[in-house]
Length: 378
Image 1 (tube, rainbow, N blue to C red):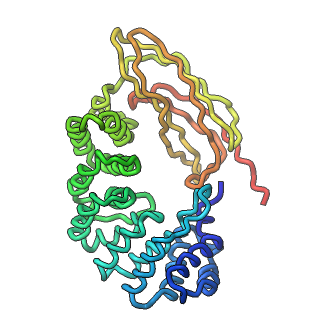
Image 2 (cartoon, helix red, strand yellow):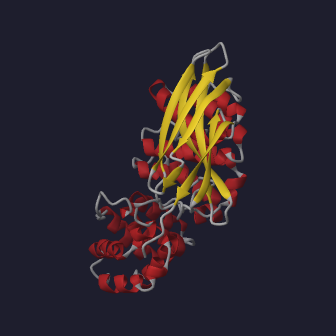
Image 3 (cartoon, one colour):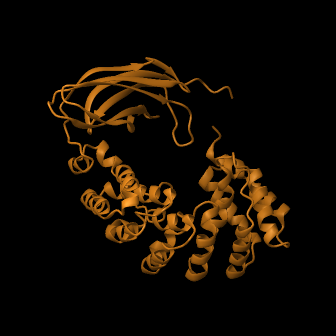
């Protein structure tokens, strides 16, 4: 898999420059690419974004309103690049965050430009400085955008408010005012677009880390009020929202999903194979659970892998295995394969990795495997 920083390499710079030049024939494509590429190779992704913003600041019109009009024109005819390129959206990231970098003193111009640009990549990072400086004005604007016909704009209303947004700056106002966030999510919970509902679930999952009772109450209310066409989708949203609480064995979350902590089951088998796994291969879990209850039970079965870190400590990452109904005194056999391959968001280190099986949030069994990480040929 390509490193994520490759999404903002020379080809992306060239496409970004072409997009801007189509909106303004005076924009110097060649100079932009040359200046933006200088020193780029040694930078990581977010550093590249900041670096390119510096070049944009030099070459876009000095007048911020004029620069924003150019960016909005570019957005209407944007070349998104190869649809098979998973990193193609990164080319637009610098122009979106440029708005936050240059426009923090011009709320109205910045908000309108972020609304127009968010569909090119996402304005979830760029809107956070405005939430910090103008929390009331920004919340009021988000409440207006909830009815926007563009799902990317509606998604921004949720994603920009995530308390623990990955890669996003922390916003103290969001940390201290969780009910303000829920007020927005209430109006998006039954949105017709799955990208909006998934963002809502991710936001609630963030909130559950500090405010589990608020999240449980919110999910109960959404389930009770869900319009008939949204019953199934609302249940999916709730399950996704509660995933961290379920993995932690939170009794209220388990009850909401029809399960209970400490399921009455015995572990008949947990086989982890292969015992020696080369990075890039697949780990296999074979599980057999037997009910010790006379009545049916809802089982939420997860597994955790304790990944080795550079300092030889381990960090657990929990993954879903299966949610099922187990009849009284019956047993069930489960099989799960899980790829252990290079990804952009995790670095793997060789060594013994422990695997835990969790049933309704409780560790029920353990296994191990040795991860082998081949040395780089470079």
